[in-house]
Amino acid sequence: MSRPDNDTFLRALLRQPVDYTPVWLMRQAGRYLPEYCETRRRAGSFLSLCKTPSLACEVTMQPLARYNLDAAILFSDILTVPDAMGLGLYFAEGEGPKFERPLRQEWEIRELAAPDPAVHLRYVMDAVVEIRRALANSVPLIGFSGSPFTLACYMVEGGGSDDFRTVKTMLYDRPDLLHRILDVTTTAVTDYLNAQIESGAQAVMIFDTWGGALSHAAYREFSLAYMERVVGSLHRVRDGERVPSIVFTKGGGQWLEAIADIGVDAIGLDWTTDLGEARRRVGDRVALQGNMDPMALFASGDALASEARRIIDGYGAGTGHVFNLGHGISQFTPPDNVSTLVQTVHQHSRRL
Ligand code: CP3
Image (cartoon, rainbow, N blue to C red):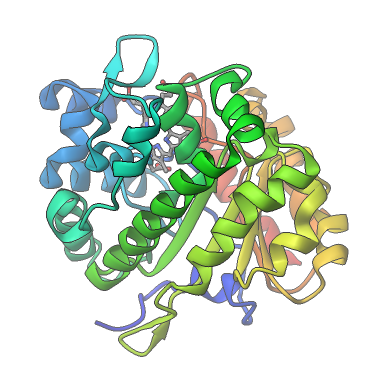
């Protein structure tokens, strides 16, 4: 297997010369696409969609059939890892993800073990292989995982949370227990990402969705330190090609220098950080991915295009920028606006 025909995304992540700014969107396969809703209906549920490799492959390819995107992302969810650890993931209609057995008791935490991805997450590896075959070297495939801390939030809270009261109580009262969860989860995430790389993922992204909810000191101790361990243990080269890594801490704009120090190739930014200033702060140490407000996709064509151009101009000339949203695309997004966005990014950046 060689480099994809369109390797612009990989080149931008490695800060090699590019002809234009590559673009993909977080959650690009999802409910805003009618064809996704149709496949999901056939699967019966979101989880069976994730756990059936042929259907996961089908929905991964859907946004690529519509738009001229520069990368595909594995269709799955970050919570498959705690599910494989035995916590029992389910989705209550309209309530988001939940666990049947959240981690609360000390003995449960002591017994927690990292799953073998080749066994317990086999369906993900099968999906990666199938997607690579379907892509036929057109664009690169991104693999991903949640960060250890973000996964721990769901594992301890038992689902989403507004204030993270349970996991933060543990952080302040029994940091030893939270460190134990993070230690095991770090091994799980590392093994999981390396298994995806060995199965064919050509770049990997770590979603630290809740790292930004931590205090300045706690972010380093409970989130960044564990991502540093993951990044330091990733397989950097597969089939003679570099496999770049991206870390996305939502709300992490004030910690860019510290994130750049952990050895990642790129940092994902949400829309609250100025891209040009971020570039000046990290220099040529890492590439940057982001960071349009997902709500800009609801604006009329001209307003949307001018916001996309503002972001591209804000980064400025030269390589090292991957255009993306600052968080996942909304399920209410008009699909035609995504065409406008992708075309604008390509056309405008070629002119720079
Ligand atoms: O980016 C992609 O296209 C790849 C697929 C992907 C999904 N989830 C599909 C999904 C990725 C990378 C994720 C990551 C994920 N999942 C995160 C981190 C990124 C982020 O968004 O902050 C988190 C926190 C989760 C956990 C999760 N999964 C939540 C909170 C929800 C419910 C949210 C909602 O919109 O209802 C999910 C479900 C989910 N994951 C959906 C999709 C397409 C919607 C499921 C459906 O079809 O009903």
